[in-house]
Image 1 (cartoon, each protein chain N blue to C red):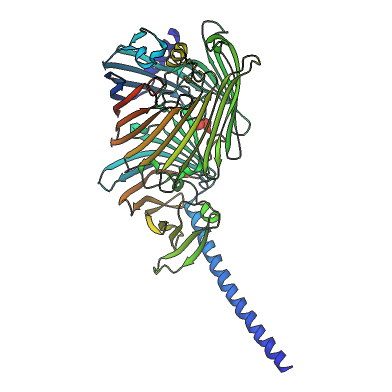
Image 2: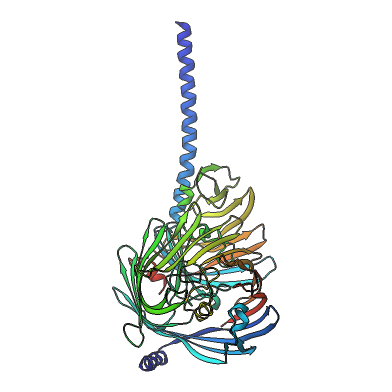
Length: 254
Length: 371
C-alpha cells in the first residue's frame, strides 16, 4: 500500500514535471510564434505602394542605382515591381504572386510576358544582393520554417531562429531575425546557406508612416561576395485599395 | 496606314513624349569552309512613347542602321554543294525604317492595339510554334523582333484569363493572318488554347511546298513540377488530309548556387526529312517561311553570373536529323549602368554539307548603350 502511495507520488511529481516542462516548452514556442506574428503584422501591412531606390555597391566598388515602383497586397503575397531607372531596364516589370510561387516577367521591347518557375526566385534581382524571393511576403517564414526564440544577448531585441520544415523548399538553411522589443519591427536578419552566414539585412531609420513603423533604409550585406545593396524608400503609402485587376498579367503590360 | 501615322504623330506632338532608345554596334566575323568574311552594323533605335491619358498609349520606334564590311551575300555560301546552285545573291544596305508605330487603348472590358506593334506569343524560348508572325534567331532568341502591322484585342475573361484576338491584315481577308488565343491558369500552370488561319506553306506531297489557306489549332502550357520549370506549345494544321505542324517542349532549373540550366526540343513536320533537303527548304527557311530547315532540333543553355555584372552562358543547339551542332559560349558584361558589352563565339560541328556544319567558326562583339 505504501509502495503504491510512493508510486502515486512519484507518478504525480513525474506528471507535474512533465506538465511544467510542457508549459515551458509550449510557452517558448507560443512566445516565438507571437513575436513572429507581431513582427509580420508590423512589417507587412495589408497593402502598400511606393517608390524605392536600390543602390548596389559591388566588391570592386562599382555602384549602380535602380529606381522602381513597388505595389503589394495581401501582406506581400502579391507584389508588382515596375522599374523606372536605369534606361536599360525601364518598364521591365515583375508580378510575384502567392508569396513567390508564381512569377511573371514583362519585357516592354517585345511586349512579352514570360512565366518563370519558382526556382527563378533564387536569382539575384537586377544583380543586387536581394533575390526575388526577398521581395515577396513573409508568410513563408511561418509555413516553411520552424521558429524558436533564442537568447539575443541584447536588451532591446528578441532573437528568432528559423530552420526549414521537412519537405519545405527554402533557399536558406537557416535564418535569424533580431526583433525590436518595443515595436516588434525587425532590427536585422541573418541568412545562412549551407551553414555559412551568407548575408545580413539591416533595417535603419525606422519612421512611422500612417502609424506603421517603416524602415526607410534597408541595407543588405553579402558576406561572401563582399557586396552591399541599399534599398531606400522614396515614397510610401499604406492601406491602398487596388483595382481588382491590378495584380494581373493585363496590368503588368500597361 | 498613312492616316494612322499622321494621327499618331499628331498625338505624339501634342502630348508629352518620352524619348529613349539605344545605340548598338556589332562586329562579326565568320569562317566558312574555304572563306571568311567580316561584317557588322551600327544601329540607332529611337523610341517615342506618349500617354495622353492613363488609358491611351502611343508607341513608335525608328531604327537607323548602317552596315559595314560584307554587304553582298550569296546564299550558295551557306548551302551544301550537292544542291548544285550556281548563285543566289542578295545585298543588304543602310536603312532607316519605322519598326513600330501603334496606339494602345484600355477600355473597361478590353484593350485594343492598332498599328505596327511588337507581338510575341508562346512559352518557348528558342522556338514558338504559336507565333505565326515571327521567327527567332537561335544564336540570339531574345533579340527584339520586327513590328507586325496588326489589330489586337485583349479581353479579360474568367478569373485572370484573357481572350486575345490578333489580325494581321493583308490585301484580302483570305490573305490576312488571324489568331485567337484563350489564356488562363490551372494551379501553378498557365495554359492557352489557340486557333488560327493563315495563307501558309503546306507540303506538296513531293518533298516540296505549295501555298494554301490553313486552319491551325494548338495550345501552350507553362508551369513547374518538383522545382523544374516546364513548358510546351504546339500548333498543328487542322486539315485531315494534309496534317503538319510544330511542337516544342522545354525544361529549366536554377540551382541554389545560381547556375541556370534549360533545354528545349523542337519538332517541325514541315521541315525536310533526312537526305531529302532541297534548295526550296533552304530558301523558305532563310526567308522565315518555315521555322526550321529540317524536322528535329535541340537547344540547351547554361548560364551563371560570374560577377554581379558579368554573366557567362553556354549555348548548344543542333539539328538532330543531320547531326550538326553549334557550340556557342557567350560573355555579357554590364560595363556601365546603361552600357552592355557582349563577346560571343560559335563553333560548329558536323559534316560540311550539313545545316550547321557548313559554318566553321564565328565571332561576334556587340556593344549597346541605352539612353
